[in-house]
Length: 524
Ligand code: HXC
Image 1 (cartoon, helix red, strand yellow):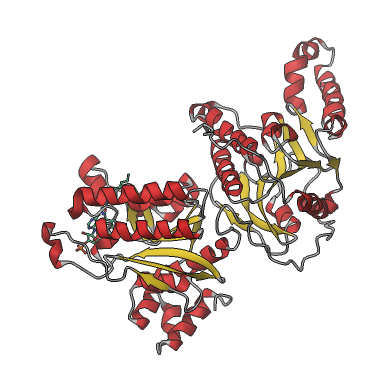
Image 2 (cartoon, rainbow, N blue to C red):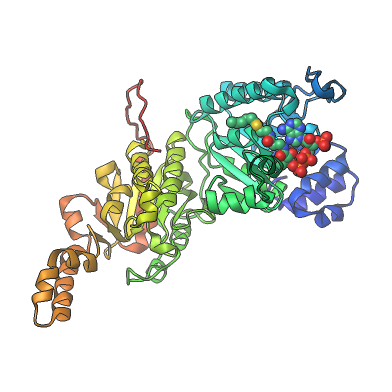
């Protein structure tokens, strides 16, 4: 069922239900599940879960649960299930647990009974070693239930953290979400939002107005664009709820069910020894010329297997999943098309987070390096680039999964060390013949080292040029690094895919021992 496009599938479902498929196509794009729900006379929450699971595999649990509150007239508002559908089922034949909150029941707000249902589902998912998908559509803690509601969120948060790194946890924000309905997602591995109809904030505009007298729209405060581009709170932005759920199914396909399993292998029809002369055209020889590194990624991985994560935030670095010879890999690539691929606060946070996710779920890392260094300046320093850059460094050092890298063009300064170099634990380090590895570029180096000599010269410009040439000859190539053994091989660009695969296949069983009782203290 899920191999058709979402729209076609919806039309088919509606036809099955005796409704008019055309109505779905005309529906507002953000909430197509509403159309399914109306046609089938089920709740939107239920329709969303049905779309998530393989056809006919959904098993609901706790459908009869009622809240017990009698405050503020709540005794007259008891609805079976208490505003959340909790269920298990299969996604591509693999077990998954999921819940979906129902905005039509007390705003999807979370009271004690609602919380107990979610906490029970979290316990089951962890015991079963299966992913948990959370479809959030809730105003947060149910105001009328007071401390029972707050305590309920505490129970959920604690379980989110206990499950972190044990099972994949994926959150979809499918409506206006506040308070605990955004804090719980923030504790999970991935957050996705539906464009124009989902919002995330600690507290919504109505409450903001009462506290700070500020007028702010929901979109400005916490719309999908705000979180996918500006804050990075959301890893994905999807155009409507059913597309979002299709993409979550796809994302699950890259992840193991738990931290004791390998990620799913998918037989590849794309030859692992495919050569790519196109690299010579994609990557300009001049190291100052931009290009889109996603063009390189697409050719390295198995055909059409790249799924980008955080595509709209910190675009100077690209991260995402792909497959190499059928094995899942996590890609981290500097992006010369945006800010020349420089590393800054957001790029460091984005890559560090992705590396930690890959490390948790045994996904080997492939880093494509083309980086001029860290972005200098007051804004970055005052924003704690020291800590955020260190976070990326820490993530690479700490990752125990196979770590492979290719320097495509340049790797300068701290960024050379950080980006999976042998010195921080890289298992395989390759470089293209034009790679430049140095503490800094020729202009900066000559300025620091030779400014007196240049000033004293009869022709300062000619002297500067001569010194830069000498520096470039000496440093701006991979030779010294290869001679020292810091690079394992200098490879021709066209053989990048083949070489990476051959190194990956022998590292798949890599195991690194860590002491059982150790809590590394990551910079924040
Ligand atoms: C009880 C709630 C509710 C809540 C919404 N509703 N939030 N009921 N508790 N938290 C009810 C409304 O009364 C309304 O009921 C219905 O849901 C729809 O809400 P509207 O406001 O009409 O919808 P909308 O305009 O779309 O605005 C959605 C919203 C807004 C932005 C989410 O409802 C809102 O600001 N709610 C409060 C958000 C919040 O501050 N929550 C507490 C967070 S504290 P009727 O009967 O009129 O249809 C928290 C603790 C954890 O969660 C903190 C983590 C550290």
